[in-house]
Structures are given as structure tokens and as C-alpha cells.
Length: 56
Image (tube, rainbow, N blue to C red):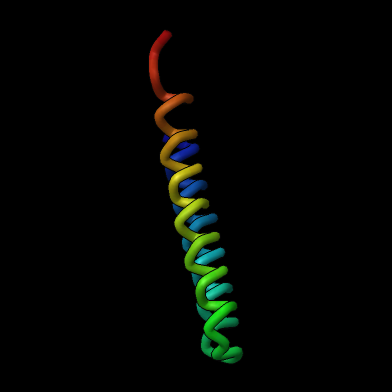
């Protein structure tokens, strides 16, 4: 449960920071890169939750 909460807080702060950068710097390549990074971060977070939470 702790991993879920801290991970969500971390993702939210990262998305907020990158969102502020995108508002200031309106460049299409930067937007594409930020979207890809956020998608990969969310996928990695979900995968880490599934592997750490699964009983073995």
C-alpha cells in the first residue's frame, strides 16, 4: 500500500512539473517527448506494483 501511495504522489509531482514546463515552452518535439516519458513512467509504475504485490 505504501508503494502505491508514494508512487502516485511521485507521478503526480512529475506530471505537474512537466506540465508547467510544457506551458512555458510550447514546442512540439518537447510535447512528444514528455508524453512518451509520462506513458513509460506510468507503465513502469504499474508493472512494479504488479510484480511486487504478487504472492510467490
